[in-house]
Image (cartoon, rainbow, N blue to C red; front, side, top):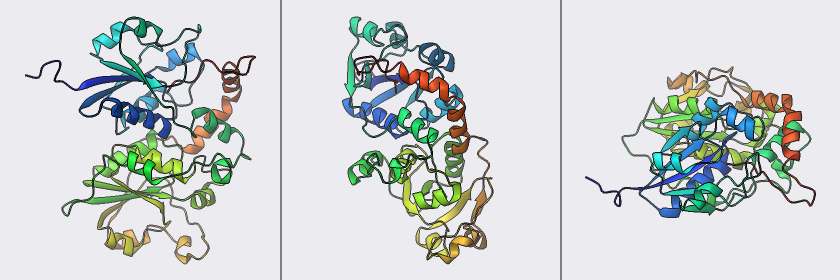
Length: 346
């Protein structure tokens, strides 16, 4: 029998995890690295009611946020409906050894530090560096103002480096000769429970899932406005943080060609139930055709219903409708001297 000293260190993080993005995932990834393996990461996620009481409404509802957090590859367990400020009692119940949060100050609706009580109780607390270049607030601003294009080519454009890709893919494995390889492609903008369920069901068709993420130009041709809200680099990291994904084709071609199917040893090509679009890309005559024509000819095409109806367009509509509420929330984050308080928790 394993003694208490031999068991994996149990790490606790908590937060709203609204629009679970790659910054959230990176905080959880960093948490695992603080003690190394083996460890066990528990993520507490607040309910809609608790968040509303503390700082205002979320974009995604609690069911969607629980599911998105649970799908993160670095999460071992999600604890639902946890208090905004963790208590020694709840941490003891879950046998927590270490509490981790980003290095930003976080306070509750009364201005009290969310972790003051557990620190006073002598529970080990540690911070990890907050991920630069991504935040829920920034994503909201992109959605509210279609003229904001910095995420495509401005100063705020996220840069995908080999180091970041290697960090996010460290637990992925190469395909084996006996793997049944499944391929699914798309924009995967504002990565959400609809995408996650599609990937989960696609993975069940085989043993190795490759995801093709279309580049910004393709997504913009399909969706218009300032879509994608997240650029290619951000979308790649979001998909790569999902536990069902084994590999990614960055800037995947619009059409799945016969050469791709053969070269990548693809046994199944998956698409959701949404209508298949035809778009025209310069210097690519195949782009105006059904992008899955070759997969259908080869008998490997599969249509899957994710069972979830939420789309990036739906998320933008939610934000637009709640604009006034979010503006009020953001004003509370700024005090007269220009510093910030009441930061949004991960």
